[in-house]
Amino acid sequence: MSRTVVVLRPAPGDAATAARLRALGLTVRQLPFFAAAPVPWTGPDATDWDALLLTSANAVRHGGPGLDALKGLPVIAVGAATAAVARAAGFGIAKIGESDAASAVTLAHEAGFARLLHLAGQDRARTGEGVTALTVYASDPTPVSDSDIRALAGCVVLLHSTRAAQMLAARVFETERGAIALVALSLAVGEAAGEGWESVDIAAEPSDDALVPLAATRAIDRASAGGDKHAMTDYVPTPQPRRARLGTILLCVVLAFAAGLALMGYAMRRGWLGTTTPVVATVEKPTTNAGYVPQQPLNANGEAPAAAAALDPAMLATREAALAGQLAALEARTAAVTIDAAAASGQATRAEGLLVAFAARRALDRGLPLGYLEEQLRLRFGASQPRATFAVIQAARQPVTIEDLRQGLDDIAPEITATTGETWGATLRQQIDQLIVLRRSDTPPPMAADRLARARRWLESDQVEAARAEVARLPGARNAGDWMASAARYVQARHALDGIENAAILGQLVQPNAVPVTPAVAAPAATPAVTPSVAPTAATPTP
Image 1 (spheres, rainbow, N blue to C red):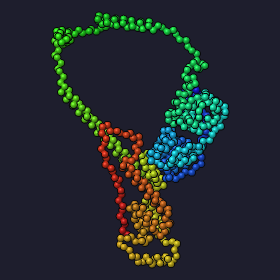
Image 2: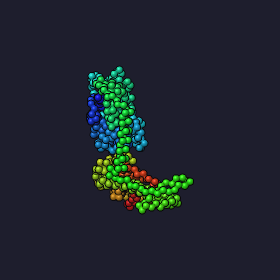
Image 3: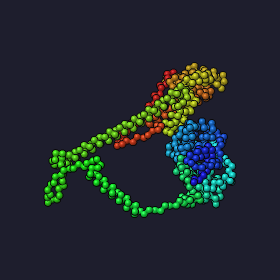
């Protein structure tokens, strides 16, 4: 008989765990100690963080609409279940920790993510340096009666969190713990439950894949009975039959086997089996003082066969050398094919990354949404270029094109070229001073209309940074705040695209579902470094 398994985790996780246990034929009782609920929170600026840290799937389930602004950040998840829920919600998974939050933080730091934003519950433990926690949900205790606690005697209890382990230890007296077996998700959860229990088993990894089979093994029989069926009250011993004498049985088997062999030999000699044994004629050779010479069989003509030719060691060595040479040639060809395959895979990965980067640049230039390209950018560049990937995704959600900047500059032209805040006398003096201006021939004219014309020419040649510099020197530059911000977003997005394209050229990207190819004999020759091309700076337009 099996023991009842009690699941203490909150919904909806308790239902999933209970379903897996019932599929194994076990009796399951759901007794959630907590109920998760969302907590109001304000999303921070995503550019202040390198990645998100998710230690529980409840952060995604109850995070609410504030999670949308953080989906451009790569995610460090603890456990495959949390990673699956985050991936289904639209997040890009960079790393998955297999043990606890501290190891996941160490894994994130090793991957280059220094600043982590931890979306966590209200009750949590410290995770490590460089991690800032943000409360997005709370696990409130649910009422559990004393009769439910007493009913845990003789059961196997599953613990998924340290908080559940602490609450169970607080509700069960030490004198009653000996009848309850615990199965914990991790070592920290098991230690939080304290001592005195019938047994405490720890899962090999923090997931239901490891926890459920361990609980099933523990629930098969009582540990206190030590696996002895006689300890059960419903066990009735079955009378054992009397053993036959072993010697008599062995003697009968041997006699029967010998009789069978004798009968088979007699039948073969008589030809009763339908086959005849060929008789081979032999010729006797005289013996000498050196010893006995064995008989040799005759051939079909009744003659003795010719003596076998003596083996030539030199010929054998030659053939061995020839076979070794052929084997070496095959190994060399195999190594060459492996090297070519590895090089082709690397080049294909670079080409795919460049295509994704070029398609993203084309979408930004046209002011179109990224669509499926957003997920491709996260998969291929989210780990190596997290800031650039986030900048491109954010820029696509608020697109700015060259045509938008030209139209905006035309709209604010009267406001930024006019002199404001001065008296009519100062304005008249400025106009008189500009009647005759002495300057070097290679210096552009400082008049507002000329600066505006130069800014427009910079925009025509896609030199937005130079255009911003000209607009900043105009008399009414204070009225161009919105235009300057739009131009800054345009420049930031293009710089991010340049970084992504350079990473694709240098091979600093992740290929989805990639399988590394290891050369069989020799390593591939070093590939010369590719220097990313830099677009030439346009010449200064002639005023």
